[in-house]
Length: 130
Image (cartoon, rainbow, N blue to C red):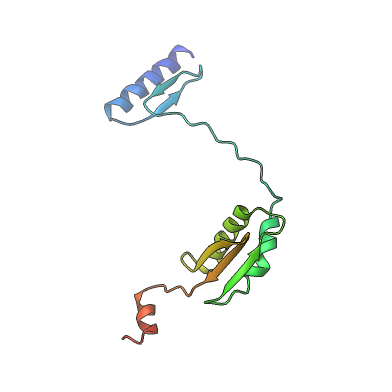
């Protein structure tokens, strides 16, 4: 690193220390300065299944679930955890968070769709309270 860059980094460090900031600086020589840990980008692991295959498997089961009914979804050629996560994620996207309960039984995923109340007004209206 040339002298001008070294002075710029030194001045930046002084300023950051003076204001009590937390920071991590890696200069062009690879020298780290600062009180934060430098985190390198985490590589994503390779997907277990081709993109879209799991959703294509579960979609027919969750698309037509009526409120207060339970549907059993077989895992097919997929592993149980992957199907479970996909069903839960897609149900939340379709109906909203808190609109379903999900469990496993005998190597299958069971999902129950619940009526979601958006606010207390809906609850009171259903109970006949004004």
